[in-house]
Amino acid sequence: MIKVQDEASISWRKRKKHFFILSHSGKPIYSRYGDEHKLAGFSATLQAIISFVESGGDCVKVVRAGKHQVVFLVKGPIYLVCISCTEEPYESLRGQLELIYGQMLVILTKSISRCFEKNPKFDMTPLLGGTEIVFSSLIHSFSWNPATFLHAYTCLPLAYATRQAAGAILQDVADSGVLFAILMCRHKVVSLVGAQKASLHPDDMLLLANFVTSSESFRTSESFSPVCLPRYNPLAFLYAYIHYFDADTYLMLLTTSSDAFYHLKECRVRIEMVLLKSNVLSEVQRSLLDGGMHVEDLPVDPLPRFGSSPHLGQHKISTDSLERVKEPNFGIGGPGGLCHFIYRSIYLDQYVSSEFSSVISTPQQQKRLYRAYQKLFASMHDKGIGPHKTQFRRDENYVLLCWVTQDFELYAAFDPLADKALAIKICNRVCQWVKDVENEIFLLGASPFSW
Image 1 (cartoon, rainbow, N blue to C red):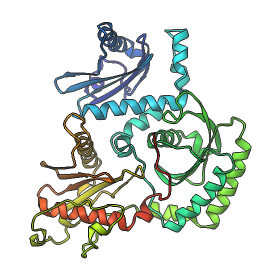
Image 2 (tube, rainbow, N blue to C red; image 1 turned 135 degrees about the vertical axis):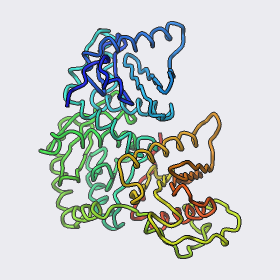
Image 3 (cartoon, rainbow, N blue to C red; image 1 turned 30 degrees about the horizontal axis):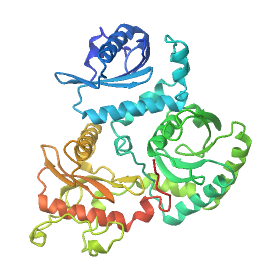
Image 4 (cartoon, rainbow, N blue to C red; image 1 turned 180 degrees about the horizontal axis):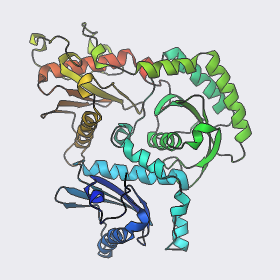
């Protein structure tokens, strides 16, 4: 594979989505594609656009040129730019730039601004040496991980008793001076405990997990690394003890103390003994193999009256004469043509996403659905014309139904020929199903995060 070098390259220009980080002096820091040093002229052009608008007492947010959007995010002496023709909403692209900036802070902290104050031509590229894969992994997650726009985290499905066993030992450790104790399987939370009054924003969890899982060095030996959590404190470093129990499951212990390595190592040994004794690690692997909720398994028997559920309150999408709707037999996907859904608990800051059904089997189909959810989310939360409570869309690929209440948000995708009344009925069933199994799919009892 020939490496794309600069903006003169045809293949470089054909890329649908570029990300750039540059300093306020126009010095390139990071480019998703190509060699950032050979893109110095291009970076200078981006810097000139920002400076020109600022000289008029304004700030540039987006420039539209044909199918392309050029989205700008100015963070003091750091400029971030996205050039995209993917038709993603401006809000989504700006949110992605915010996460890229947050990932940079995880590694360097916000105090990097002081270096630019002392020397406007400061070159921070060496400080990010070897971290290109971290940014590349984060950018890739913009095409598959709902957490990047939902601002919520997801849990690995586990029996309630299993998750409680993991949480109990993590709580013991947190009581011994650990700020956060987090047990993860890939990008999913197994259990999470914070010290009293300490809260962890889902975006920080996303960035921290990406930093760990994309860095090969963490997999090979136990590590003790300074990290910054931008939403917790963008100006200070915490210290993270990281240890992989197997290829997928890892522990993160965060503390404010720079000399806590041996204490955290002892904590990890205690945690590992309990996890092995209570079969938590084997249950994690079993859950990983089984996957999450499958739309094909959606219960079709009559369900309890919806209003009796304390979690969902009295919320219910209303339909006319639903009883007259004849439900089709199971085919490909779930009942009523249900292909996929995402349910977000607003109180818990957690979401659950179903496994992709066989009608959404290819990466291209999955990315297309993900982008459709992004647009739906942006539309539902558009402060200019919303917020909305429900939305129903039909195109050549899907019927999309979104439902937002004070307790939850539901995003569901159906076959493009799905009946609207039946789709609404199925969504009511999905919400009840989630409620019925919430002990297994959510981390309950965790204090809601406030920020």
